[in-house]
Length: 132
Image 1 (cartoon, helix red, strand yellow):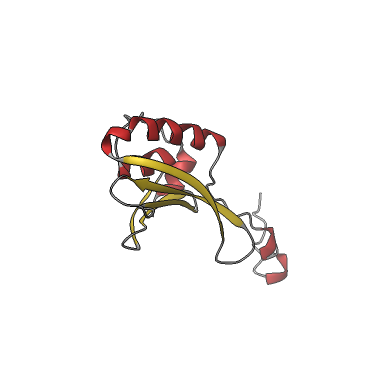
Image 2: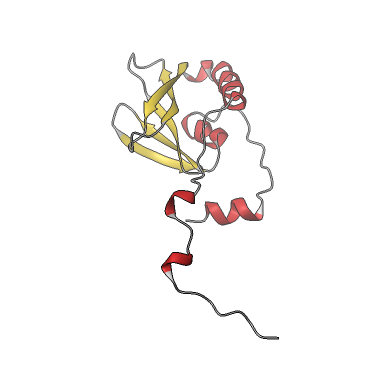
């Protein structure tokens, strides 16, 4: 049995617009967890949070980000937004990235660890995507 010849012809490749980009987004489940996190964190200085819509850099889509206020400042203290399959936490006052996290829950815990995180098994596909 012979193997079929591999084609290196560019015309045989799918067009670039067939690529589906995977990215995280704020869902109702995230909003419910955010409400629990805020309530649990009031004693640790969490004040309020809101969801804002932000135009993406490409201008093609609008993504939702979480803005967090703490008791010590009237200005927003943190921004949490999706970046690919990860969540980025930024210090909104000092305008720098604090870190990238594999889940929304881990991103919130980076700000104030007020709810114990329940580790879930990572699938092979998720493990591959989270490397790097």
